[in-house]
Image (cartoon, rainbow, N blue to C red; front, side):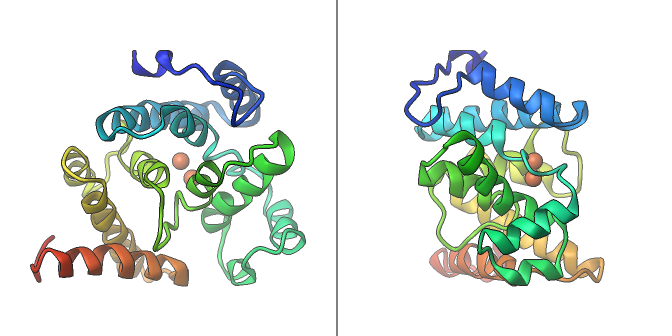
Length: 210
Ligand SMILES: [Fe+2]
Ligand SMILES: [Fe+2]
């Protein structure tokens, strides 16, 4: 299996892949641990396909939901003490756990690589500029095999063709979904949509891409 072939160099973390996975197994619920391992498998498939650094992709995938099950109080305290975007306080853990996860992994495991930390930070919200590592984590989190919501098959098909096109699709789908349910939209999600979905449409000269 593809994920068995990733051996960590100790360049980005002192932990081996097995040790990093064990940290997540001990920290997260069984259900979420299984999710992060499926995200890793999907992400490594995309890394192979698009020739992206597999070690970085594996670390970011396994660690991406590290903060997801922390208490609201702990995350809110960290948003303030770690000088994160205070506007996040108007939202919930769905928005917080990416940026806070990146902070915790830097503080607790000395992970310092910008691409890995940004991939974790942006995995839910996205950003106008994302490395290919970050693009892959954002996409893999959306399309991992247990996801079954509307639009996921389209995203899976697009991911065989283009990371940018898949990101464009997911950023639009996420925004549409929030709006349909009358949910508040974190402004940075709109920036992601503007950067990826709108510019993709313009670049392809097609007003009805999706
Ligand atoms: Fe997440
Ligand atoms: Fe996730």
